[in-house]
Image 1: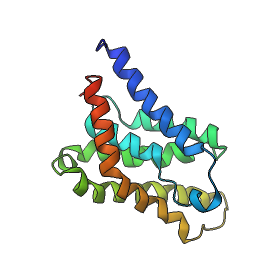
Image 2: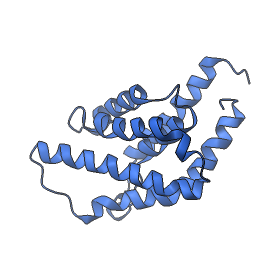
Image 3: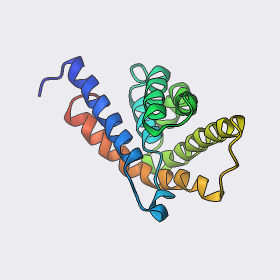
Image 4: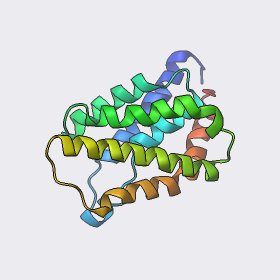
Length: 162
């Protein structure tokens, strides 16, 4: 496998595309409430590992793609993904000091920020407040973070990205 910048760029795009597919994949109603915020988790990983390459503009672009794909208000995901990624880029040195199990708490807070911003947009457009199940994906994402971190780290090393 060559380690050209285009290949590295392609691996990041493939992981973000996979996150998009996992986000829109049809699920039974009971399981949909437990669907983690795949795109946010994937962007947090890349911003944590490669803060100079993957940042707010990547989050904004991925958010716009999610807005179009899911049919939400244009800019909802773009805003709600950009702010947590900005925080990761600013705090990546502190967060990376911890092992993935301890990073999960920071990731949970970042996922809460993403959900709060999405909730703010829903309120701004006049949508009703979602039920408490709205917050479950943040906990699922926190629990999945160590596994996802190790999986993406192995992928990054395989393709010599980090």
